[in-house]
Length: 402
Length: 74
Image (cartoon, rainbow over all chains, first blue to last red; front, side, top):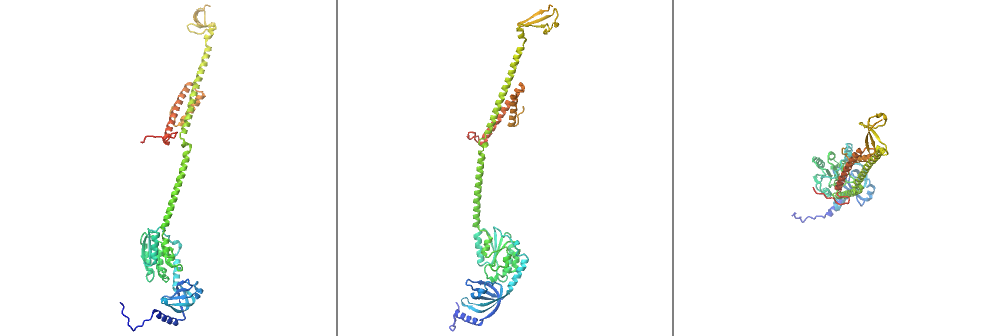
């Protein structure tokens, strides 16, 4: 329990005190000139412009009402060094004082901006931002490392998206401070450590909350060096639309938000499955079509005569053989017949030449004895020689008497 | 006479024999020899054709009439 309040004390309400402060402050600073750097610039839907004026050690929340803002809002940017004239006002619902700006004058880039710009130029010359040294993100990461604040929406968003889209990936969370003293060193050493492990496919570097004033860690040269040295591809989700950090420029890929970074890094499982299903179906269809085509072609070939009636050739050859057979027989027969005819005619020729026919007509043939020579001349024989006389029906012995 | 290597060789030889015989310019004895050779070739060719036909029926698995050809399972 708290101690009991003495009865003499008459407390005032918050509103009363705030009203008193408001009067005091607003009367004390009705018109002041302030120089500082613009930061956390927001052009609200109402047309009013909210921003901080700041230097190294202090921040002054500022507001520029619509009427004044219309002249400046498109020209205003974070990091601008400005001089404004305005008055201190108190906004009781927030319990905050602010500078209501009536006039604004630009005087050049802020100191922090100058330093940042110099660093950017230096790293640019070193080739840190060169598109050709950007590494390609893996299509199907198996191990994803998150370097971000362990608390906050960023890590939750990233984990949620990764587990929805690509649940098979192993996620390593490397919690780091993302703002304040030592943050750059923590981020850089986390990146270095992760590069010492094998099998990490991609690193997501996320900011995870914090105001836009606190991008300093991601504009630090140490962080830039660590990103540049990483052999593992790094996706940054640090800055926002209007404020690209050096980390974003050096990273292999820049995402507008942690969620987008998670999406860039992971394939969508469902989408992949659909693709695989579609391809499988297509493969199946193609295979079937090919099969049908082949089947048809085969059927056509099968219907060709050689296959439809394979014995046709055999029958043809048989016919040819039969034909040859017939010709052979016929030729041989005719050869035999011709031989027969020759013999017949020779026989009749022989017949016609036979001397027996002459003898039958009354002629006779005389031969010497004993040497059987046909007597053609008287000189062949002499008186007293013995001869043989052949007539049609036989032969006789005779003696030459004169 | 040596056995011709292929069916076509045999046919060619047979054709020549028939042609020679048909020409009739050869002697009877030689004609007879040729005739005998021709008959032997014819037999040889018919044999070859029969074997081819058997093989075709076996390979096709059906005969000319389309009836399936059965053979013992080895």
